[in-house]
Length: 217
Image 1 (cartoon, helix red, strand yellow):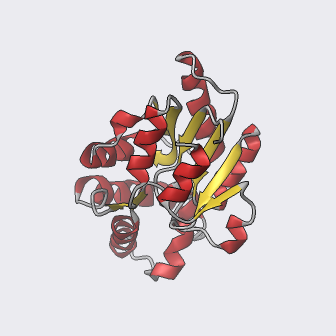
Image 2 (cartoon, rainbow, N blue to C red):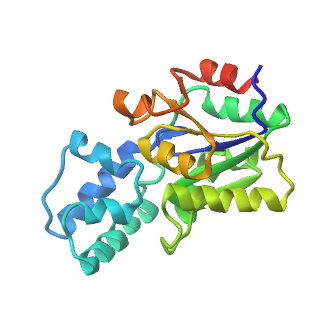
């Protein structure tokens, strides 16, 4: 049995498959602003990084990036995009088991707080977390490293045991963010990562049962 004391959880690609609503919101944004549409394969790299980084990758100037962000969030938050998602099998049960085993649990997601709360309340999983480590609504705290830093600060305030922390995620951004803080990282194979990304992780799991075994719950 492993002795992780605190577990940080990514959201998109780890707890929920948000791609249907995310992809639809991106396409509606591109259509409204007269930008070329992208295929599912072309949109997969947009799953994980901050929204502003994804829009900048299209070669847009900062004014256009901010306009894309505004339009995207309107579609995503106000027109059903956020709730067009599914929970991955067994993951919420793994979080619940982690909590029941006495571990501290926090979200560590680059999704803004407003979207995180919308999704979390809909799927009823916020109650399992001691801290909601999210990106800020103003995008000033949006990288994985900044989100982890915020989550760890908030966990310290409640005297969480941070002697052995692990981040559960699905993309290379999770690995990079964890490395900046010197914490272990496990990637899940059901998300949006690929083998090259998986090879950078300390741990790799294929399903929720393997995840529970890793966490010792």
